Figure (cartoon, rainbow, N blue to C red):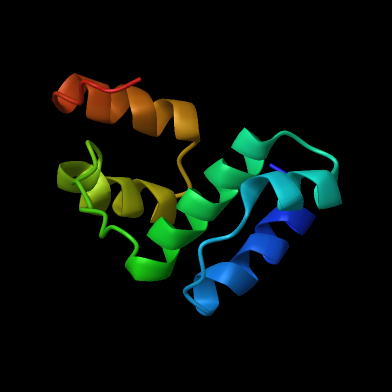
Length: 91
């Protein structure tokens, strides 16, 4: 979506005014549904962004082993093969 449409619609969101989609569409030379979508998107973003849960990495149990191998100047492929042998299931 175009940045100029988003910025134009933000004025209406901040002032809590429902815009005339057809007039704005004419002003920005686009479809009224594009303006409506931008307005609805701006209203949602104005409220509160969703919090993301941090999921654990598959490498977390092997971090200490990997760091020890890096300190011993082992190559990445050999470290990968080592932790794979220890039970790492990633790729």
